[in-house]
Length: 259
Image 1 (cartoon, one colour):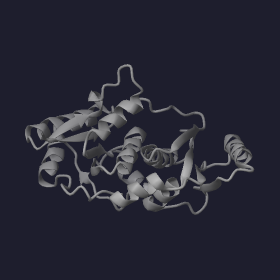
Image 2: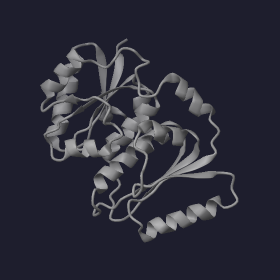
Image 3: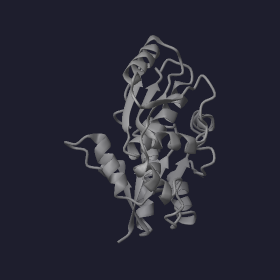
């Protein structure tokens, strides 16, 4: 049986969707892997996130289009990282601020990706530079998985808002109140200060945490997109590691239910 390969990509714009889905059809003809798109996850009557995570679980390879830095795609990428999937990212750097946003993200700057502008370039790159067959070549090694499953969860990891809004202050007060007298330690990452930059440092903080709280920015804030994409990636890792997860958003904010 051929190995299954999950493809994560946004639901728009139409040109991007067509390029990825046409590339999947070409790759399918290679008869090397079985491409699985998120549209085939079978979400009817189910929670969408559960259906998609189950589909990712069923695949050994995770391919994702980073064009536009879609929050849902980034969440799924984080989940795939936590589940030690072999990664094959690709990106059309010519689209909007995609390249500059990716560089601002920093967490994935050391991770290579395929550059493309059409479906044939995606398929050709997959043929010439396929995902590694070595299952050990993932961003998290096997030992770390057993470590976090056994790790003593002694903390709450809070990723702060970029701005000290009334809601941000209320969240901080509620956290302080909830942890008063508790044995849990509060770990924080504040983007207004010297926040963590290495992906491994976030993973270490999640490992030792009972739960993770992330504060997303309103869409009318400067650099809200990069901030929310970063937090979506970390949220996906936390969800993949089985940690309790709370995502708080400042209005105006539209939850990306669809890709």
